[in-house]
Amino acid sequence: MHLGSAMKTPTSSRIVLLLMIFQAASFLEQFCVLCYLYMWCFTLVIDMMTGGSFSRSSREPKYKMEFHPEEAPFHPDEDQESVVMPDTNGRSYICYLPKIEKAKSEKPVNQVNITSMIVETERRLKLKTPDELLEVFKGKCLVRQEGWWTYELCHEQKLRQFHVEDEKKILSLQVVQEFVLGIYDEEATAAFNQNLKDVSTLKDPRSKDASQRYHAHQYTNGTLCDLTNQPRETEVRFVCSEPRAMISSITELSTCKYALTVQSPMLCKHPLFQEERPVWHTINCNALPKTYKESKVKKDSTGGDKQIFMVTEVENPTNAQSEE
Image (cartoon, rainbow, N blue to C red; front, top):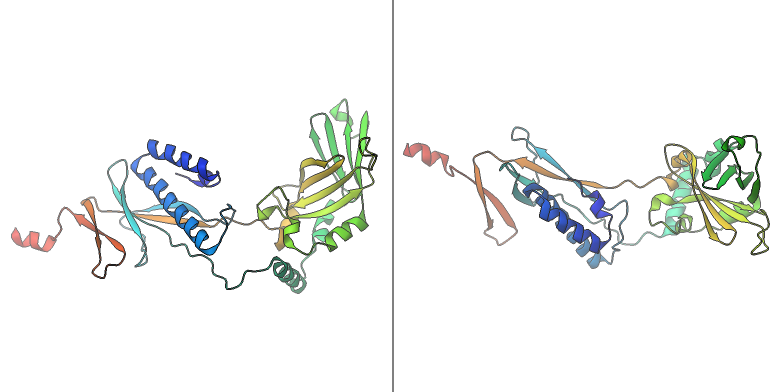
């Protein structure tokens, strides 16, 4: 059972979804839901205590289950919490919840410091700059068709929007209607990137995912706009995305001002633009002996945490043999 989709939904919808899953699930699937709720509530409590945010990110822990046979069991830590659950066939498993430690930091890391660290690392390792990585686009054009319009971006040259009656005519440039959405402006691009002092300004404002940081080029002095009487202009945003380079979207931010996003695998070589990987935690379940009958939950003599004691059909094998 995979709960990744449930983790990405809003809180209220997530609860309703989990309740629906719980009602229709088997015992083992119900256990998965309960484990998820347990870890989710634990995370919320930690966030409340530390002043953290409830927003979901790609770095938020995700969970998976692994089942181990009797002959090759999982070996838990002494203080690792566990729960016993049966499957639909009546076979019982003891499942160990993963330990999740909140990252500790005496002082919050400033975004400016992060930028400085990356710049320093780049200097030491002599990494290529974003523009150097994007040089593979030079002399090439990317084309995207959306309904009536076709968009053509020629790297560091110009971006145009046009319509053709026959798609085959795109290559021969026989168009019936055309607008230039901007011509590459080297000075505006340099000024824009020079003014970026905070890493957060490199993010797409519509996205909360850090993987959507982008490197921007400014295209100005396009075809005059009838509504504003100003030249059209576009911000071309290069993002780290695989497996192939392509124009992924174009949006009109305001009248005759556009944002065009280009998926650029080569940009993934730069640490600033690399996609954040989700952190996975494993719930390990050991198969219990077929003689397993029930479990008793007792407190230890010091009144500490609850422990689970397994009771088999023959609780004291030594005494049983002596009686025979």
